[in-house]
Length: 456
Image 1 (tube, one colour):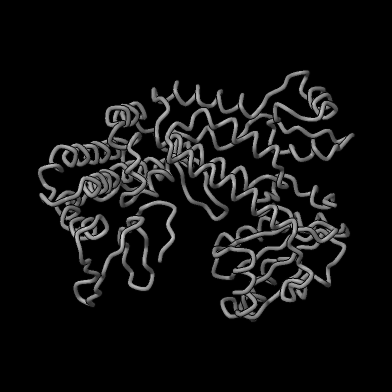
Image 2: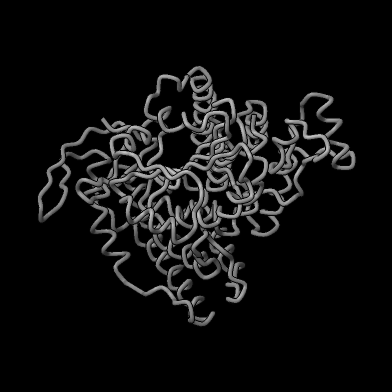
């Protein structure tokens, strides 16, 4: 039994395969070292996995290398034109190329899988042409010439029903890539990624509710009257809510792209809702509900609305469990933090082979130094099997990484991974002076480092 959020292609690490799995299907599979996986039966799962490789070879085998960093703008434009032509050829010929016994749902999934690939290639190109990876993360390149966004937007509008407004696109192969690019990096939905208005903080009167809105400038529509009075005083009598923000950004998106509300847009909104939950300084059901109510009018697809509400329910349930759960009997974690009781703890799970981990620690050096003498401890925890002590300590010493460096046994590392439900690193936790874990796994130390010492 495999639990899936929806029917999708899923990577099978044991076999190095990425088969399609249809929710509710039961299939017999045979693995041959030379032929790979073979699927028995004639349901949707079996059909998609049986027919997709040949269709992919027919429509996607023509290879054209992606333009390089020093190629001209014309080379980039030609590559995009080529991918648009691939998309149009698939759209034109796919129906005649599908086997006669294909179930209706099989046809939709195969079609979406093939159409996803050229769109993914286009969005990837636009991303990497304009955004460059660096040691500390991502940065926008202003030196490279901008591509013709109008052409791209025209293409997406023209084939809206095949991609942007096609729910089967998230069930197809490569589904994660275009949704990821549109949601996070590319200008299509990027305006929903953050708030550019100045922070709402009164240094002379640090009301805790106001401090909670230090990064998130947006206020709920319904709140304590005293809080609203103080907040309005800080922003010249105006009240800017999260609903206002979503409406404003939606209008900007429409003006910039010429597109209206669609399935992909709704998926992006839900993803930003998930990120907002992760980034809240402390769980606040009123703030989370305010965000939910602000985006609900735009969520018109029943399946998207269902998953959004399921996530909201899970957030509330998990918080209720978290509030009841005590870490007193957690001997592994308590053994690590006990020597630092009474301090705010910034707990960073890292590894020597993890570039982002090392980059984050390098960026934090000045912050750690600035907070010396304050009731704050930086605990850098690593798996001694994956990061041998001698090599790790040599790097720490060479780069003057201060803080508390803790090496733990692989079994303890595996336990903590399971306990805190993380698989990738870096992974961070914040514990206040009273020993309560806060929902600050995405805490940006470079933005407001000194507020750590104030967490009670």
